[in-house]
Image (cartoon, rainbow, N blue to C red; front, side, top):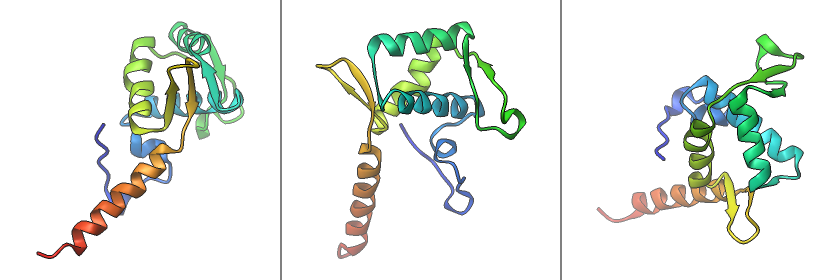
Length: 130
């Protein structure tokens, strides 16, 4: 996944840097909150229940939006789009780790490590003799 950002107009919210639409930002935040509420890890079955609840419009939660603050909101998001536009990019960026043996999805700090490694690669490029 390619992340394009303007360092002079960098949003305060990391989700707004990573995702292109407001709806994707909301669903990604709700998904991370769901993972945090389940000790940072869910099984494939739990993930399927989460995606199905979103797909059917039955997922109720509070969202971090001033218009809906303090209210329960029912979210609806297509299951296939959730997997294609939210979960898969989060896995490829290192925000989510999928354990093939345990068949679980977990929050990961690999994204942070990769961003630091990219910064060091750029620093080496700057130091390289022309």
